[in-house]
Image 1 (tube, rainbow, N blue to C red):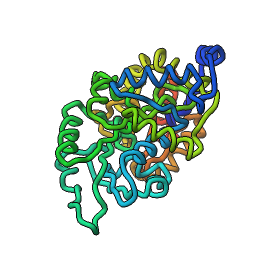
Image 2: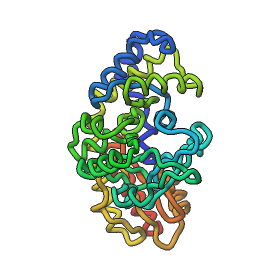
Image 3: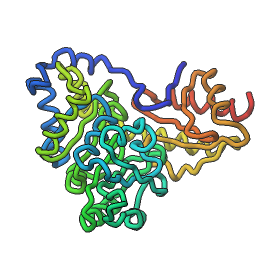
Image 4: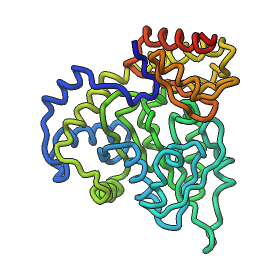
Length: 342
């Protein structure tokens, strides 16, 4: 048996999803003639209370498009030091938009108004100009932590007072909403731009979307084309995304349940350290005692269990709908054998 907990991006399309893709009406999306793409963009914009949406190949592209339409050369983006924009997007913000990233040390990947306030620069000629605050919900390197509504409201208020734009990297926004009970329209009222992903917790094979005002999306569409992201009969992919939103979103609560159960079991193993009460969604981070993360991962791989290193001593396990209870049992049994040296 193989249990792949490396990421929630490793899922495969189900037969039902493939069927939805096969019957989707399509057209040329660069000409804006793909009805399935158009429908998905309109539905997601309405769901999140934004004026418009743009379907793109990846979360990295949707994040970078947001930065490009909100800021420009000489500007600065304030974010947490664990943020995806800072760690996993190949330094793209500096190349594509000429902006500087200003990473702050938050808690579990989350920023606070006081932390942001101290990072806002005066508008001197010799300073980069603070222009955007970017938050991630849920936090990836923060262990799947979730922003509550009051926390985001505080950040939005500060941004409004300081003349800053707010970008929400919602790669796992669906997980965040499942945990917090927040309605999607709340995020549209708070953020200037939102990135949502269909290929992580929801299990679509490809695709993200940037949501913003109509004028901003018009600019983003041109940059998408400029950056090589213009797709043709993309309705095949949009159909998978639409299917995932409708059919896989209700499964997220089970991913979270399994993650919490996993964390509690790991807390009882003396070879590892974890605070199980910190596990809110589908991501579990735990530390290795006395060995390296890679050494443990090699042993787990021999047992047919996949996880990833998130530091020299830290391992990430990410639950998704294609890891059921038998997969959870398999992962825990393998980890217990590694813990005992067996």
